Length: 326
View 1 (cartoon, rainbow, N blue to C red):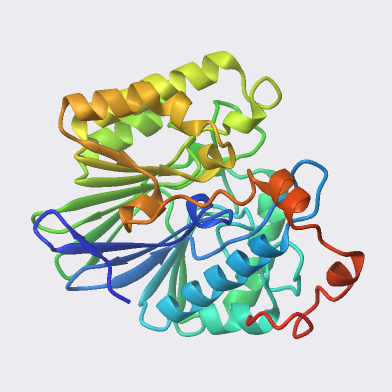
View 2 (view 1 turned 120 degrees about the horizontal axis):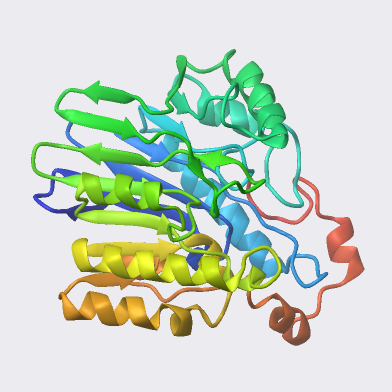
């Protein structure tokens, strides 16, 4: 798999799975002359509207798993920013939400260098448990596992630099912490900022700006949870911080939580305007590849109304019974 060259062509980036592709994910393939890595090699579906995911979502999920597994064949390093199931492949069998199994997890992690979020500090209880199970399993198949919080790793002239744990959205959130990562070569800089939701927190904003990326991949705030799990003030802060990023960074991919809402372009209008003013670009992951966003989760109600699903279809939602490749 080849990515899109950025800057001097020293770094190539290929989005593998995102909300704009129809699944929950921020999986990204990154290549330099020294190393090939996948950041957050997971994808999943999620609950929404009290409706089960539509068949189209399962097709997108299966396709995303195939892309990630194929890309991983040529990857040296896999990084995991945190232990939510849309950011790594767990080692249990589930064909409803994560499209995972022990066999898939083993294929993904075998022989790889894993640079991962620390499970002993700056982590909430649910992620600590998931991280423990992940480490216990992957230690038997991976070549090497190392905690990455706040660390730098050098591969030839390529430097991977991980942030200290950053809030998963708002300060003191119960969702815990995530790691951002920058990939630097002598002439290029790329930053992947998973689940910082804008960012909302000023320290996360400073980490990104200090790395002066030519390309930034960042998760936007969960607009669909407005006045439920995120307040107006936090959404306003995220918007202003994204405007600041748009002034400084030539190309920004904003995706993930934000694209679980069909009206995200209206919310992002001030960011688009700021980017245009500086002749910069703000786009989704799919648009980075020249494709229109396909927001299947946000369209779930409409999909079920137009293409109703039978109970029998869901009863066959097990490995090998739907004709969907794993």
